[in-house]
Amino acid sequence: MEYPKQSNMNIMFNESMHMPNITFCMSKQQAWSHLPLNNSKLVDEWDRRIQTELEKLNSREKFLEEAWDYRLVLEAYEVIATLNSMERETTAQGSARSINFFITHPKLQTKRTMIKAWLNEIKHRGVTFEELTQKVGLETIKYSTTTISTDNI
Image (spheres, helix red, strand yellow):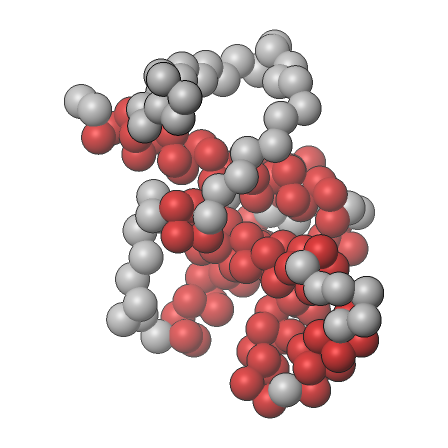
């Protein structure tokens, strides 16, 4: 069986257990498939909810240790994906063009604003970008495993 189509995986989270360094690669579509998206909600309502949730996580400890609302996971995932793709998926020759396009293109203004806001949030709490990345990854996996667990009941 060279390329199995199924695999058995059992993940158990235990606070006393330290996970080894593992990288999970998950497409945006797969990561978001476990989150309750509702595209009919108003942008202002979404933004207010993001602010309310961030205000609850007003310290470094709360930000990194408490469970996040799915909206925070979605936005932070988008921020990380955008910045990582600009850094990693661009050739050395295309970097300047890619960055300039991102900075100047009018259609990307909303995304630029969101990235700036998130970078300010982590700076305010003394959280590194790497810690944000780890937190978003963990929250994404938690939503995925919770959904998988409830689907199998």
